[in-house]
Length: 381
Ligand SMILES: *Cc1c(COP(=O)(O)O)cnc(C)c1O
Image (cartoon, rainbow, N blue to C red; front, side):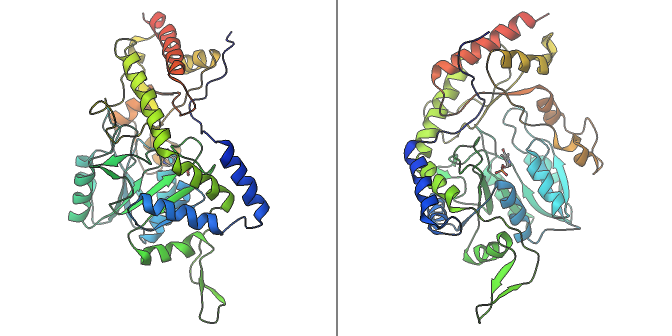
């Protein structure tokens, strides 16, 4: 029905120089734990104003290691938003702690800090907020709250590398910060992630957590004192990450231009609920990893599933970000029920992620918006 190429909802831009660079690493014989890992970590550290950074095989690994670094385990509680990706629930549960969910803001989708404060108990050890494209949670209020209650903060910044708060990069300040370099994120190392820590002492403790639990004895033999994981990033991936980080400003500019186009096209019709409007024209420090809207389902005859199928039939991919964590089987196993978090649940029912990635042109946004209007407008009762 369409001759236009298929439009994915997310994806990376990989240039020829990067691909050549990967071939060089493959020929070099140093495939893992080599110079490109050090180089990627140094570049990320510079990006984070010199804070130590360790790269790992995913953000999921980085979050698991961050929880272990804080000594969080059985008997501990971690407060997190129910509107996030499965990773946060999974890793809190995996280390044996209890996920304590709170609701999010309906528009920004960020964690509700008032609800966080109300959920603090003597067992609370950490707050784990997920940052959303187009908006960061109030970072000053978040860290003040954590300091007041002596809690660790593990920021899930998987979606927002390149976002800034008061002119500073996410990762350059705060406590522990995790990034993802999955192909759908702002930069990619194919699979990969990073953990930003506070000082060299913490960084040294990350090393055994990501590599077999190994520490080195004075006679250069090895010891293992606790069961460490195996999360070290190969040099092949780090080589891609170094090239991607250098292009981050350019990727962000294109993402911003595409988001601006979406705002302009959606301003009149169809009546979807949009992400938070940029604070001002130009660069307001927000990165646009995704364009997720809420469909006006109560005023449509179509279901979301039918809407997505109609988009797919027009060669346009869509996503769902995200299901409600407290209502998945694992979330419910902690006693959570329907109706607990109205904003999270409404987003989970109505959200759809439309294509936004730096390989797209403005005309692709127009194509998506025309398709959305074509599908939604006739579906009104
Ligand atoms: C992608 C994503 C993750 C997981 O990242 P991986 O690198 O794939 O482990 C975690 N949290 C959020 C919000 C994400 O979007």
